[in-house]
Length: 79
Image 1 (cartoon, rainbow, N blue to C red):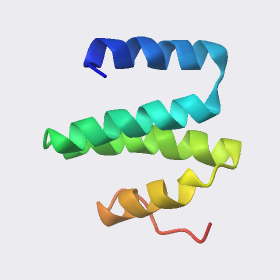
Image 2 (spheres, helix red, strand yellow; image 1 turned 60 degrees about the vertical axis):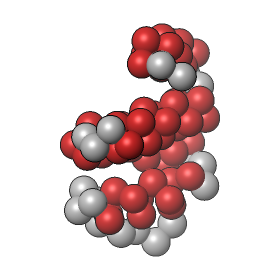
Image 3 (cartoon, rainbow, N blue to C red; image 1 turned 60 degrees about the horizontal axis):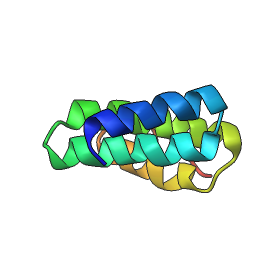
Image 4 (cartoon, rainbow, N blue to C red; image 1 turned 30 degrees about the vertical axis):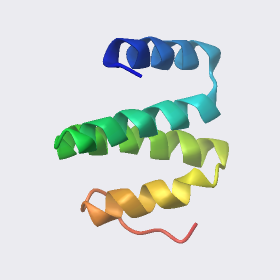
C-alpha cells in the first residue's frame, strides 16, 4: 500500500471509528517507516496503534508495547 492509499485508509478508518482497522493501518505505517529507517516516525505510528489496541482490548497491544519498549518509547507492561 503506498503512502497516499495508506493516508486515505487511515482517514476512512477514523471516520468509521474502526479500531481494528486503525491498529492494522497504524502498524503498517510504523512498519513502513521502520523499513525506511525513520525510527521516530515508526514509533509515532506504533504509539497510535498501541493506544487504539489498548482502547479496543485487542491482543496486538502486547506486541506493540514490546516494540515500543524495545525502542525506549514505552515501559514494558504486563498485558
